[in-house]
Image (cartoon, rainbow, N blue to C red; front, side):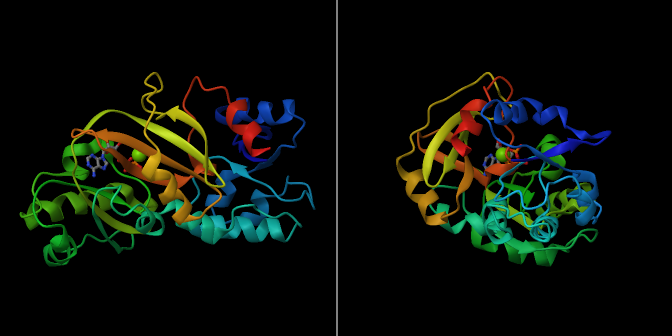
Length: 280
Ligand SMILES: Nc1ncnc2c1ncn2[C@@H]1O[C@H](COP(=O)(O)OP(=O)(O)OP(=O)(O)O)[C@@H](O)[C@H]1O
Ligand SMILES: [Mg+2]
């Protein structure tokens, strides 16, 4: 198992992942560390310097990595004889909305997207064209990976799609606030009325191996109905993914988002062995 090192003491596991690394070691597994800061700075070779050569196939548990940097991580490890169990194509498919959306069509809010580079605001015409297939009503804006949900009114929620100037303002603010971290492009999703907390379901080789709370609401555990979701996860066809599920106000279980489970956060209070033992 690869974990992120503590940025100040690279020989130690980042405190955020310490309990998970302990669970691996307690079970007789091997822990190796990468320097996440070095990886994000473009020094993949430096980032994997402490990974033993010819370690064998590895899973990663750590902070999110932009897809391009993830590819560099795979290559740097391969040069040391170490294979990531999740290659860059599999990572992209689970981590970025355009990669997983089709598999969850009908189970997740209707969505449009366009590739977009950081630093430049789209004009009103571009945004109007992008959102036209969604029709009217409220919407939510994010990039291929993350939203600005904590700046809900200014950079995430769109009250009315039929007002392109207002939509463009929210999109522009999202792009501005994401800065150089803007992942992939612009995503706009129809708003649905959700009720109650999200559940995070962890899937390994198509099986739901663990259901936890969402990290934002660690005390609220819910047991979602997985009937339709299992088929969607099978369609996605990636080994280790998460799905965040929530009940809509009409009672239907909806997929808020999918993700690569290597970089999905485990909520506080969950015994990490429940996840790590399954990976082992
Ligand atoms: N289509 C939607 N309709 C209604 N609410 C939504 C919709 N999409 C997202 N939300 C709300 O916004 C929140 C953030 O959205 P989302 O999970 O997609 O972004 P995120 O930034 O990746 O969040 P995180 O990674 O922290 O789960 C959701 O938890 C949900 O409450
Ligand atoms: Mg989310």
